[in-house]
Picture: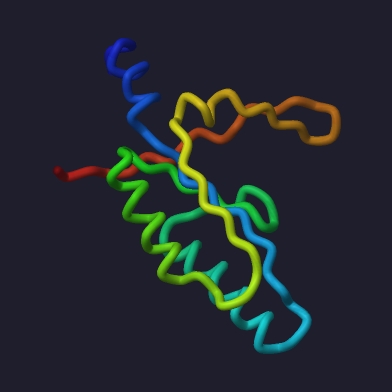
Length: 114
């Protein structure tokens, strides 16, 4: 792909990040937390950390669809934060495993028909 278009796509492509802190003291709460987590995985999110899930989206409209879907599946209790950032912003993340800096994972390739 032409580098010019690749740079433009970094501002057009989006990442949806979902942060949550859900209660898990009772069986019902654990079931609701697991249901929410499974809904995220079914919608194409990947686990970034234990309570942070991310999803790459080709456009802002696509990110809005997944944000809306996540809102629809919110559990009754707990804190959930949904954030959208551009691919360019996500690319500026600094990741460490211990003291060793590592590169962020590249987004998965998705086939777009239209």
